[in-house]
Amino acid sequence: MCGIVGYIGPKDAYPILIKGLYRLEYRGYDSAGVALLDGDLKLYKTQGKVDDLARLVNGQNVAGTIGISHTRWATHGEPNDVNAHPHYSPSGNMAIIHNGIIENYGSLKEELLNRGYVFRSDTDTEVLIHLIEDIQLNEKTDLVEAVRIALNQVVGAYAIVIVSKEYPDHLIAAKKGSPLVIGVGKDEYFLASDASPIVEYTKNVVYLDDEEMAIVPRHGKLKIKTIRNQEKTPYITELEMQLHSIEKGGFDHFMLKEIYEQPRSIRDSMRGRLNVAKGIISLGGIIDYEQKLVNCQRIIIVACGTSWHAGLVGEYLFEDLARIPVEVEYASEFRYRNPVITEDDVVIAISQSGETADTLAAIQLARSKGATIIGICNVVGSSIARATHAGSYTHAGPEIGVASTKAFTAQVTILTLMALSIADKKGTITKTRYHQLIAEMDAIPAKVEKTLKVNDCIMAIAKIFQLSRNFLYLGRGYNFPVALEGALKLKEISYIHAEGYPAAEMKHGPIALIDEEMPVVVMATRKGTYDKVVSNIQEVKARKGIIIALVTEGDTIVRNMADHVIEIPDTDEILVPLVATIPLQLLSYHIAVLRGCNVDQPRNLAKSVTVE
Ligand code: G6P
Image (cartoon, rainbow, N blue to C red; front, side, top):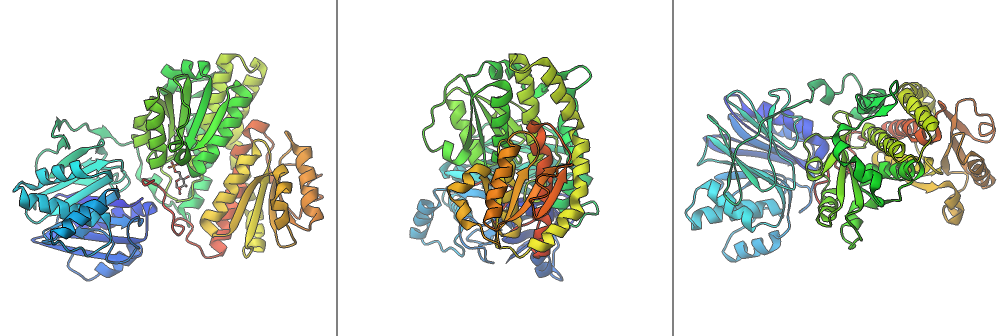
C-alpha cells in the first residue's frame, strides 16, 4: 500500500528512484511522484502509473544525487496530481513521502489551519510535513528533532522519508506500522518499502523497527534512534533475494510467471523440512513451540484475502488430521469483536506480505491475551514475521502480481506439513497413513507441473466465457476453499462478478441465479464427497446452467454431464487444493488477458495492505 524509495550517494538519484518505483508498483498505482535535490528542490508528480511519471519527467532536469519517490494507493483524497506524493512543506524547503495513515490528521490539520497554514492537498501526509516545519520554526530545533517531536504527536502508521534543502547531505526516515528497509551500499544508501528496489545495488540491509528514525548521511555512518530519543546500533542483515526472482523472466505477466513457478515454490517450501526416506517432517522455525500446538485446546487462524482461504484449508487439515478444533477468522473482524482468547490457544497468522495491518493488529491482540502466535509469512523480516513467537516462512520467493498465486499454494504446503507433523506427534493419524501422505506430498510438485499442461484447454474455455458477467464456483470439503479462491481470483483481475459456494449450499440461494448464461465451475475431483457433487451438478444442469468441471484424470461420470472438463492428476483428498487451484488461477488469468485487463495491477487493489 504505497511504495516509497529514497536514494543518497554519489550517483544520479533519478534512474535509481524510477526503477525502484517500477519494482514497487504492485503496492499501489494511483499516482506517482519524485523529488530531487540539486540546490533546488524539484518535484514532479502525476496521477496515474509510474509510466505516466516517467513521461512527465522526460526531458526535464533530473539532476541530483539525493531524492525521494512514491507510488500511491490512495487513502486520503482522490488519486489526482495534487494528492500525489511527495508533498512540500509550507516553505517549499522540504518534501516528504509517506506510506501509511495519520489517523489524527484531522485535529492536527485544524490546529495548523487556525495558525494560518494553507494546504494544497487533501492528504494526511501534507499535514505531517506542515507539522514538522511548524515545530522546527517554533521550537527552533533542527530537522531531526522536529521530526521526532512531530512523530510523538502522531497517531497512526507511517513509513516516511524527508529530503530538505537545509540538509542536502541527509535523508531523514522513520517508521511505525508500515515497512521500511535501508540498503547500505559503499558510500550510498537506499531506502524502500521492501528490498526489491535495493537488491541490485547491495545485499546489506537494515530493517527499521517501529518508532525508529534513521538519519541517513551522504558520507559516514547511518544513525538510528527511537522517537523517544534512544540511540540504536544499526543491525545489518544480508538479503537472500535474487534479482531474477523479481523480474518477469520472459513471461508476459508476473502473474503467469508466478503460476508457472509453483512446482518450484511448493518444492522450496518443503525443502529441508520433509524427509520422506526417514519419514520426518521438521519445521525448524516452530520447533520450540511445537509442543504448544500438540497440547493446545484450539487453533485460531487469522488472515485476510487469499491467505484467509489458505487458512480455511488449514482448518480442514488440522481438524481432520490432528483433531484440534480450528476457527478461521478474518483478521479485521477478529480484532474488533472482543474475541475469547486464552493462554491455551495457538494463533496461526498467515500473510504473504507479512505487513497486512489487520492481521498484525489481530496478532497483537492475541499476544496480549497470552496466546502463542505462529506466523506463516512469505517476506523474510516482515512486521508479522517479527511480531510472532515462531513461524515458518513460505519459500515462494517474491510475489509481484497483485493477485496472489504461488503464495497461496506455499501457505497450504506449510499448513499441510504442520498438520501432518502435529498429527503424527499426537498419534491422531496412523503411521501407514502418515507415510502414505508424506510420500504423496513429495509427489505434489511433479503433479502441479503436469497440471500446468492444461493451459491450452483453459485458454479455449476462457475464450468462450470471456464476456460472461457472472460466475459461480462450487466445491465441497477440501475443495470448498479452492472454490472461494477461484472466485476471488476471477473477481480481482477480470472484474467479473464471481461467487464461491459450498456446493450443497447452492440450493439455499445461489441456485436462483442459475440460467443458461451462468457458467458454474464445479470442483468434482474423485474421492471425498464426489457422489454428492455429482448430484449438485445435476441440479445445475436441470436449470440449464453451464458446467465447467474440474475432474480427476480418467473421470467418465462427470465428463458425460459437464459442458467443459478440465482434468487434473489424481492425488489424496487432503492434497487436492494444491493441485486444483492451478487451473482456476489460469482460468482467471486468461479471461483477464482476453478482456484487456491489467493482470498484474488490477484496479483499486494493492498487494500489501498496510491500512485497516
Ligand atoms: C491484499 C492482496 C491479496 C492478499 C491480501 C492479504 O488484498 O491484494 O492478494 O491476499 O491482501 O495479504 P497478505 O500479504 O496478508 O497475505
